[in-house]
Amino acid sequence: MAPDASDPELRISASSIRLRKAGVPVVCLTAYTYPVARLLDDHVDLLLVGDSVAMVLHGHETTLGASLEMMIAHGQAVMRGSARACVVVDMPAGSYEATPRQAVASARRIVNETGCQAVKLEGGVTVARQIAAIVAAGIPVMGHIGLQPQSVASDGGYRIKGRTQENVAALYRDAEAVEKAGAFSVVIEGTVETVAADLTRQISIPTIGIGASGDCDGQILVIDDMVGLTVDRVPKFVKQYADLRSVISQAAASYAAEVRSRTFPGPNHVFSAAADKNKA
Ligand code: KIV
Image (tube, rainbow, N blue to C red; front, side, top):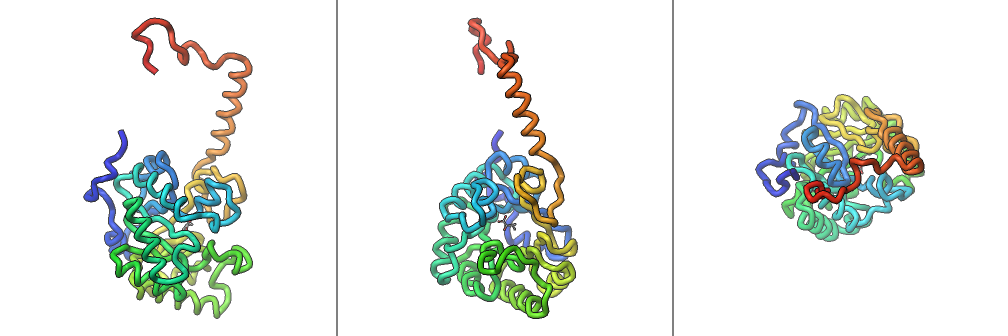
């Protein structure tokens, strides 16, 4: 049976995630589709419809391939497939950076068209006004500092943050800016372990680590990476808990062999003329 996605009483709210500072770690995963949301909903506190969907499901080179329409379509699917988790939808590059007004309009569209609990956007000091404006419009915001995939081109690649003094100083400024602007939590990605742990101690909102520190207030991974579905190389910080690529590949090989040898479909997979055996 499909979950009752429409009952707001069942949902973990952004404000209850905000209260999880220094408590039981917040369990987060990305989800992009209805069936995966249904599988994950019982196990996690928060589902992120990340703009990584552009790479993971749509085959784009970077997350810059994500559009507002793409994020909304996947956000709707994840909301239909979940009833419990706090669902956060990423704001794609180009939908918020220009002005606070643009950011509020895009965030409103995402929330109105998906029913999600919050939006996430990348950046610290440079987007603090956008975060404050979205929060003032009544929409909870999750920040994202450290390695920011939307900026990899301008950054010269996927570079770990916190290895130089000026980098560390910028991270502290970003964390503080996001907190002050009113975000309910912040993702820290690809950041030196000790720096991520110290940032976690310095700010009052929960930090969600990915390639950061076990001391963060929660953790997030990209679902396809952690179940072994990602075809390309996965980052060092990913732990693979399953090998679904092998499972799917073996299933496809067995199916192909049985079709070629005419052993599939067998007697159980076809319909006889008897009326009571006509159910699909
Ligand atoms: O887009 C995404 O999946 C993300 C997570 C990696 C945090 O931003």
